[in-house]
Length: 329
Image (cartoon, rainbow, N blue to C red; front, side, top):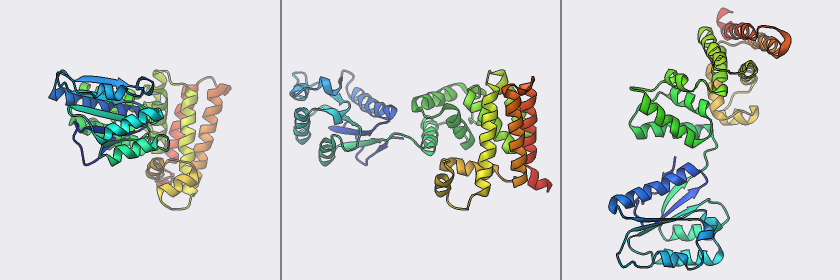
């Protein structure tokens, strides 16, 4: 989510959007433009890249108008501006024009840092638009998207959507919009599954998750749906193998915080939390049995048998039984 400073007047003389997340940068611009056009429907918007902003151009764009029109001047990739143009922008920051809002989009980092520092020193309204590389950040983004619409979505639904869509924020935002438009009431994991389980990666991992949780009936249902929507059997055996191996890795690891275990095991912290919940009921013998079942299914799927669907069903049932081995012992 884009984070704003306490100075949050959308029509502040200067807005500084810092980061590399394109969706958030575009939203920062869109908010300013919408506010300006709410104040004056005839607001003139100029959206410029560094090659379009030559020395003297900013002064021309921000010079007093005969009609005193409101104007929004957007400068993208401000870190790439030429030295002479940076001088122009710095001079403008010292004496911004009335009825004009300057929006600087800057990637952050060392390049162009002098301009970044100057804008902050001048008291620019700042919006942080960092690249969301962590699954937890994308999960928080999805939750905020639902909250912004005034709709309720369960934590499981939010996680399922992130698992299904992946890292593209535009796709995540679009998926939230679609669900909100099409579904009444609280959006839960089942709803997300109906809309997005057809995605190969998402549906194969749904099969694996239900299997390692010992939920055989749900795993078989997810398996049949995946196969009916064209998911390759080899993708499902791969997901099953990853799910069982994760159980084995975490069960044999030393205790510790998710961040420490994530570094030790090569898993993201959010996955550590999920696997911890899934591993209840597992024993070392159960992991061994499940790995053999996956290996057998993988061999049959890759040509060692004439009925891959049956091989997968057999593996899913074996894994689900192994997930409950502690309770049977």
